[in-house]
Length: 559
Image 1 (cartoon, rainbow, N blue to C red):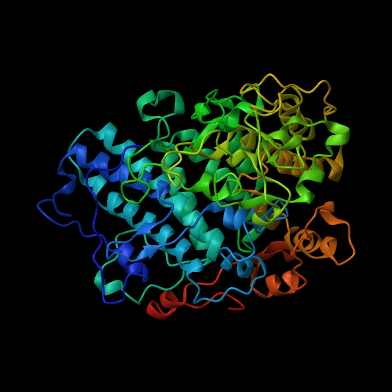
Image 2 (tube, helix red, strand yellow; image 1 turned 135 degrees about the vertical axis):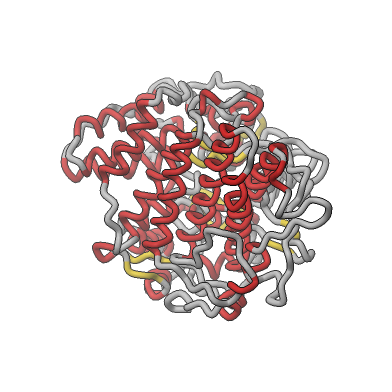
């Protein structure tokens, strides 16, 4: 995605950069200003490109030069789950230990980074939505841009809500008179606005097939429907005031399926390579390219892959390592599930081979015996923090699995089983990952036999099987934590994996280095949670202290 040539500058108020006023109050400077910027269609498109640019922003300086730190989705969604360890060495990015153990305080910068990034995205969307309805140029272009801005505002509010709960709800650009006067909206009010924005996006966006190849990666009708289904699923499990039903999830996923715009890639292994950008299975992914800078705003690459690479061979920083619990879930001695080769690599797996080469590893620079294969690159980029591989946000496989779960709740059991087994069928007919065989850089390594039969279970066991297949199919894709929370399983599962199984004397992992135990994770996490439906506990990060003070916001429970 090309960077916007026109950069919207943000007025710095007396509250300072760390207040959301700074990245919500948009006031373009120079010859073009907020009164005339949207007079040209070209500038309207640039404003929307600026929204996609926000998706790319891993870290960077704000308008006053202060720094917004790393805020990768896998911090909150993989590492906080039973799928992944913090990784790297124990002293690196120690704030993640506080995140894991629910001992984080509102003063820590880590919590601010997600808040700033989310509201910065909201601000850009609001600036576009304030102005696009009044333009006099091509109405079809205008409507598509409104659809994209609506999708993006929903995306960034969804990003904020699942991290902090109810947040201040802004549907227009912030005015100076608003500062400190806008209270937190309820969780339900935020979900309602997200759904309204996505519904508008569905009405206005084109289908994926109508988007020119040169514009690949821009939001489509299918992306809006799939994101709305995902939001509905999470709302059902986390919002005690929700009236959303599984029929609404079913309707959205069914529309995506019936659109004929998407299909499963025949070989699961091909999904995780750079050359597989925007393939038939891609519903929405963040676009990256090769650029001349690894610093914002000039960078068009991502630090996502460098963050998770192998420290020993200088391909990264070693974070987000798969757990023994995840590896065991594949039960490969029985299933020979080829998907595991796309999830893990390391000294204790496949003789340490990655992209056809036996690599070196240092367990003291990893949190587990494995690294994340879905985040591995064949060659270190010229700019290590600016990899050009896209980040997949929603795949068609997830749509099928969401549909299967919705169908189960609607007692459409044969339909649930059918969609579930489409995933199983693709898995058993896939190869091992690219470069699995030493000396080769292809997909020639195929299992001699795979024991992944169709699932024909019934009742509650079928739901359990759907949940498990979600874990196996979507492992290390920034989804697991949210699946556990929305289904009410999080604290029992995380206590078992991070605490009980790691007790002194256990054989957890059978590795050369013991796994860090978190004996207080369940009690501490529940104390930092809000109540969801059916007794669910929904853990949240603290509202950054400067925001709580500047805007007089109620702090989240337990902080």
